[in-house]
Image (tube, rainbow, N blue to C red; front, side):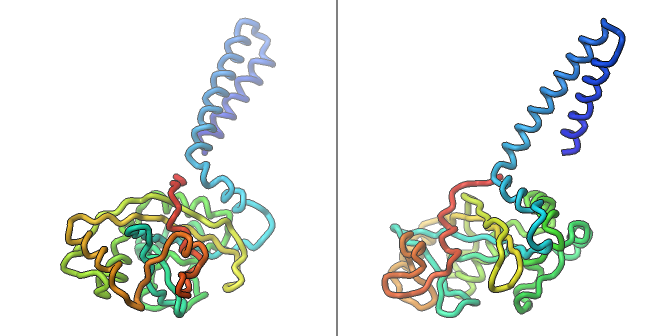
Amino acid sequence: MVRIILELLTAIIFFIWGVFTEDTNLQPELKGMAIGTISVFLIECIILLNSNWGFLKLYWDSYKPWGQKEIRLTIAYLFRIENNGKYLLIKSNRIANTYQPVGGVYKYFHPETTTKFNEIGIITDNSIENDEDSENDLRVKLKNKCNLPKFLDWFMQKTQREIDPWREFYEELVATVILPPEDFKYIHYELVGQHYDRIHFDERFRVDTFKYVDVFVAKCINEKQINAIKNLRDTLSDKYVWATEAEIKNRRTEDGKAITQHSYKIFQNKKLK
């Protein structure tokens, strides 16, 4: 951004110099330099817009003068686990008798992030009770929503934070023995989509909120894992359900089991950046 501003200023200087200089031989050269610099400036703008296209509406929300300055951030990831047209959902620990995709909130590294978080105004969120499991979650508050682009720049750099979604997969499916631990010592996965909700007022927490999620597809690495997923599909349990896309979007299975509102996000297939 600084480079683009400098290019624009340089073009303006060349143009003004070319207009007001009395040297008629120098005027065309200066105007030509101004045109060349403006061309570079326009190319840089196009590249910047293209690389940030998915976040342009969000940046507008961040700089709008109305609304609350402080916002709550929830930065998470979800797994899309499919078998024969149905998707695996597990029972929620926070919302009773409700099912949701495997996944959770990213964690940041402490104290490595201290300087950066102080710089952009990240503070602890006490909207829900924090415990050992939720320590260092990227469920935080930002003092000034104008700094949301800076936070997202930090997040997209993938430094000083968790980048591997294995932790929640292990905690929710392997440690609970929903999947056999001996066959799931690790998995392959692919980032297939990114989704965010524009800044909005959250009625539950009474604060403006920004929610972002990465969507991963879990990939079995051998026949044992493939068979374990198939066996899971054929085994009844109150710990999990298999639901169709229509059921997930309707937030309820045919036999009446409730599904969380955010579950539909696993069908996101577009990357924002």
